[in-house]
Amino acid sequence: MTNRHIQTPIMHRVVSHNGLIFVGGTTCDDEGLDMAGQTREILAKLDSYLAEAGSDKTKLLSATIFITDMALKPQMDVVWKEWLSPESFPTRATVGVADLGGTTLIEIVVTAHA
Image 1 (cartoon, helix red, strand yellow):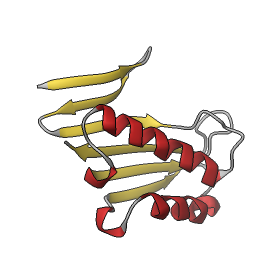
Image 2 (cartoon, rainbow, N blue to C red):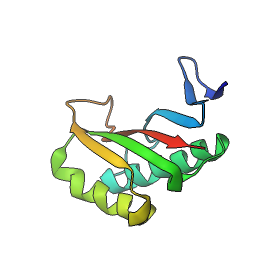
Image 3 (tube, helix red, strand yellow):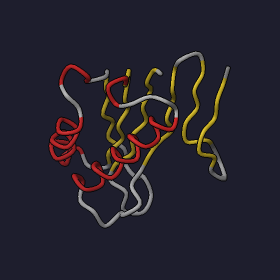
């Protein structure tokens, strides 16, 4: 069975199917924040989105992180490691991109299980 949560004009933020939970690209609302601040805001959203689908951050399987400045990756990594315990780290890729729109520095996509 497929369940869709949190509809937007162009997508559902979360889709679950057969015990897997897919969370679409998530960015911050306050683009004036630095990399650490934007990351914290996104991770708080992910906590909420995963809860909506009956999951949590300890059940993450993979993450793809898009950032506009690889020099800021260490700031993101600090916040990431504060959010997750090492035994809960998912697989992860961090990809440098030219632009995420506006002054957005980071976008995160995750997959988890129920």
